[in-house]
Length: 83
Image (tube, rainbow, N blue to C red):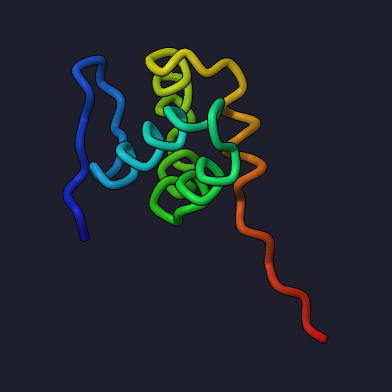
């Protein structure tokens, strides 16, 4: 398990993979929503956002993506339905 990281403002962001995925997803969101969805749907990103919504606010402000919360919510992997 990857060690957790705390931002200088005291937000526990989980592992660096989670923050990297979230920031990468935010960076490409306006140019390529499909690529952003892949990045934002990763389990470490979704888990960190669910455990600490403040990290989503931080990323949204830092990357200047106003609807990042919607993008992350839309990226939640859909459970497969049994046939």
